[in-house]
Length: 225
Image (tube, rainbow, N blue to C red; front, side, top):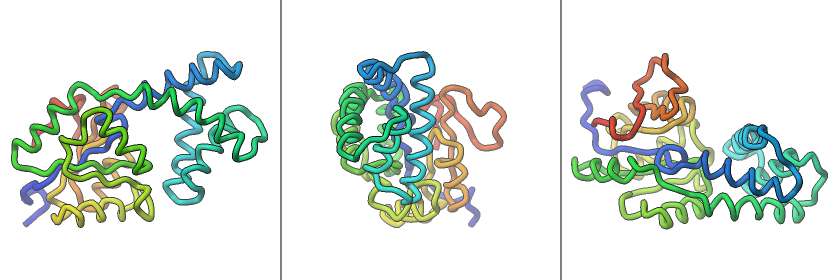
């Protein structure tokens, strides 16, 4: 039987910027936090996002620790020599604002409920710290809608490492071709999943990849399975 003919048994969602609006929360938080440190300007959200992406990728490869990537983000953003304690204290000001800004996309819970109504398992595979991601699910009312969450902090490496996808399908007890991956990152959620044998759908909310060769949707309302 080919992968296209394999009946689906599970839908595996990314979390940040797929079910939860992480970009908006992070952008608003860093603007407010940076202003308290005298750092302002239109480039603040973009600079923070770019260095966060870079250092978080290093954490996913286990080059640095989860706390270490936070410290490096603060040091580089502020261009300052900071002790670990100083960097942790400064990051806490951002983190408080970031977590307060978490919101769920309006199409997320309806999509999760359609998955279960179709007799499928609803799972989440997220590149994040398990404790923080579980708080996110609980606070936003997503936890009751999900059967399984796997966070990369419990894995040898995060997406797009093939081991991340293999781990989640092993926990689900399904073949790779029976679990559809849905996420907003072309590299981490789609290319990586396809390379690991999972079918995948790109959630392109902001039309960043209009000419991609992969299956693409603009909202979770368009998700079919």
